[in-house]
Image (cartoon, rainbow, N blue to C red; front, side, top):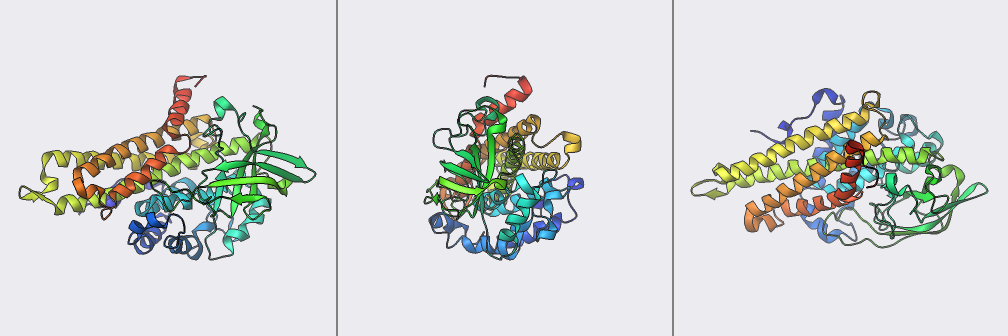
Length: 422
């Protein structure tokens, strides 16, 4: 019988550890997430039901250590030739169970990409933060503090806005950065994060790339305040809230790299964000396929399983086709990130644009088909017993982040059509 593992992946791209990591995460998902995920929506504020899943995956199984060097207690994925494809496999397996958990887990590594990934490892900061993640069996969360109240996705739209709207400031006083500002919506905020990667400007209003700063701030630093989580349409396992930085002081060497390089490697962070988003979409599609396979085999119409109806079969084929394309193109994007020697640096405008293209195609197609799946299932489609409506709500949030579809379109148009003013 055909199942989710029959959707194609480029097997020649995969690490020898791929099947083992995939099996570990799938077993975790079947034990710690899928039986309970219908109750997660009510747990959006306290995470009492969600916390055991994070503790098992991140702390006890040790997945929060994957980027750090081996000699610091990590798994060394930051210098692996399979960083992208390995991450994609882990992300899609988690998202198959719950994309909110996948997002919260994935964003743990988003700021760490700045310091843990070759060819720009910041050894001093790895040594500083590795014990936080590698010497505990409790889950430890980090977050990228990007979005601001007045600018939305302006920070990611650097090609046009060029950082001129960043209001969070970093002022160097002696050997310390003094940070002031207000961020909102970061994944793993709302009281969760233990470590922030904070995007700042060292010169408000400047369009000079050298004034863009990425500075690490432990969440317990005096002057850091996290607000309560927002209640959203979906993704209860991903907490989001406000963060205020009021005269927060951190050592000068907590800046990831320095003028120019902070922005360059931040664009790489965006590339990994695009890839991760596609993996989340893929995982959801795989699970919706499983749900519909059973539903359309067990529900009868005019004496035959629903899947034997021509119109239904046509839709199911569309869903399978889209899942096949999204999965294969997602792994291809991940492999492009693994092979900058062939495809170009991960922080290049080309790679960012190509990742944006795959991301918004995947989101658009998946949401279109999930909407039709809810319609096909009738009243069952809105019934939480089947989880399709949960996936539908969760995926809408994937479509909205990192500037949404509009910024994706603009960056794709800039690259492929040389648009300059978008």
